[in-house]
Length: 278
Ligand code: ATP
Image 1 (cartoon, rainbow, N blue to C red):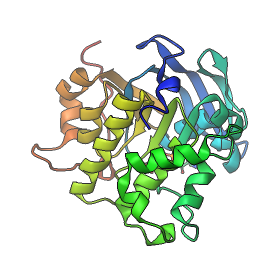
Image 2 (cartoon, rainbow, N blue to C red):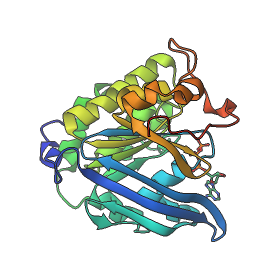
Image 3 (tube, rainbow, N blue to C red):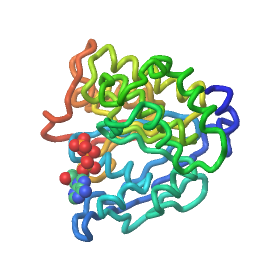
Image 4 (cartoon, rainbow, N blue to C red):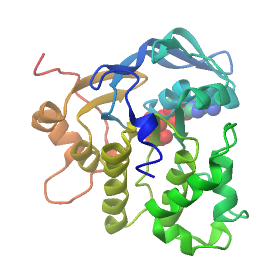
């Protein structure tokens, strides 16, 4: 995998410069439901960036606005821009966006349970026209040896294996950037660590840029170099990993009391909009 993707890992833009820029976007569902109210963020080439916030803040909607999957839910970017490698992609068809190098791994994995692992992986390559799919299957299995052993239906995989399959399916599209929506959801603490290890590996070894939506803020901020916090359809806070981890509000509301304790955003009532370091 490392070798095969090294071509795409050669940064088309210099490391550290934005590969994705979301500029002041507004998103509306069903022509009337305004969900995003001027969201801006940027993701540098080769980095992991976290997008955090309570339930219903608009995190998944932001990812769908980038990947084009909004369309499948009657959603639309009605204002602002989404630029990927200098090209405007807002409201472009999802398969066009996959071809340009962005793949979204949706919340809940969305693997096809009554198809085999290999059939699921082939789905990830559906936009490709090159002949390297079989070779990439081998390379995915080298990266995730456990999946090679699972020859049956994907529905029989454990939660952790299903998450690995969902990520592997994204790799089959040879993405430059992966949008990951809640990869740790429903996994045991041990598996959460394993999945975050894989996320780091994808980034480090394959050079894939990652925008990560997570409820597990502690793990997300260990992996990410920069983070954004959303509430009610807006970004209310952003900063480097160190700035966020040091921020009193982030510590209180998002990182919990210490140790490995996981703090659920579901219990949050409010978030103080203070940018202490700005
Ligand atoms: P969660 O962690 O619960 O998924 P989130 O931060 O990802 O939260 P979104 O799923 O983006 O939030 O939802 C933001 C808002 O948009 C919510 O009020 C939600 O009800 C609404 N919403 C999401 N999808 C749709 C849709 N297809 N049609 C109408 N409203 C939607």
